[in-house]
Image (cartoon, rainbow, N blue to C red; front, side, top):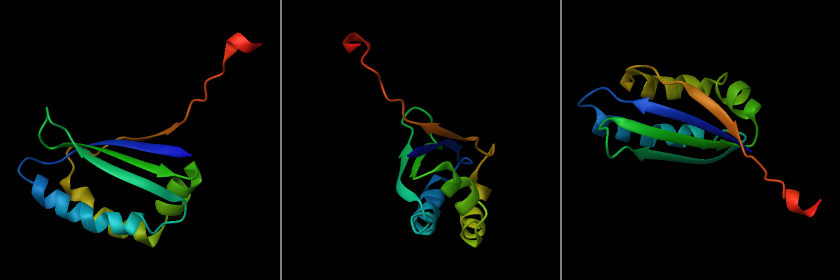
Length: 103
């Protein structure tokens, strides 16, 4: 499982419009192969800042499958005009802890 992370800085005064557009965009991404879950959270301390977390089955599902698909063009047209600056997207993988006391 891969976790996509992006901090989204939405242009001032456009948060409500962004949230409405994101509701439509969520339907696009959730239909993609390898998509697992999505959460969008609004920052309490910094208005207009959102945390997007998307779980994918693999990195390729996001980078190759979604980002190179016709659906991504729809996603982009719905959302990319809201951001300033454009967000950095990073990918994370889970860390499995090893119990070193039972060697």
